[in-house]
Image (tube, rainbow, N blue to C red; front, side, top):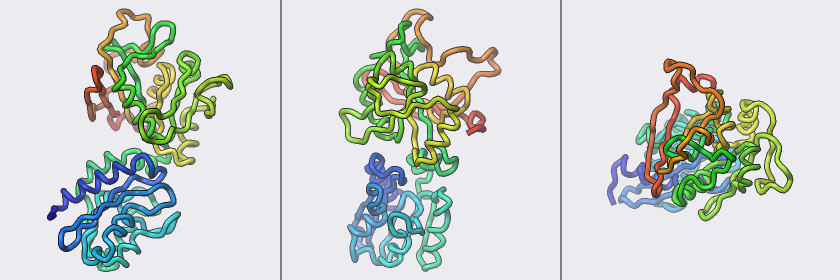
Length: 334
């Protein structure tokens, strides 16, 4: 099978998706060896302590890797951590050409892997499908650049913008398809956060159910009873920025915020949200006494209106998912 650079890198991107739920805190990377005769061998990042994507692809190709081209979504590492440097393995395998999607923002890697390969006489090209890969690795890139987790706020709302009834109950605004999507988001996140009020109202477990993937670490803002189903959890009463710094130092790459309007407003007003995911149900509360997306006061005049950009949308059964990200002006404090 003959493939061009874009086609081969797309195969690597697809391989990386398979590692999304198992590789953390390592980045989810895909690699593809294309031999001189057109044979293709894929690899993706293993669980922590296991081989990186490039090594898995090389192991599949064996001696056919000599003179071949390897496509990797992220720059190969050139340092020894839990595993040896991928650059050395590529050199020893006799790879003739390396095509890299994006450079690694990790200071231990950034540029070093590419330089090492070129010093060894290997042809290296960078930037194939870079935008798609940067989006795929968004949480990892953010963590390496800021030392904080990528914060995703997920809110289920009615069409008239309400998130809970006047008594605080919110199960269930959206349908089963949207709720299954939340399970996926939890599996993709290293930690999930709610407020103590949500725990008292809904008593959620916040675990991953009905899909493959590990349950995230559970964090509650405030105090909850020992009998709450969210236990064992971390109870936090300090500043949100301190929490993000603490989680970042513990290799939490992505934090999913599932809290109610008080928690959502706290993160929003401090410009700490990197991605907003709204699940909008074709339902109406019919009044203004139900709980909104954000509690307390918002803007006082239209010149203060918060604006972002819609980066994706999809139908989830009868519900609609809209993914919104801040404009850069809103992220100056992050």
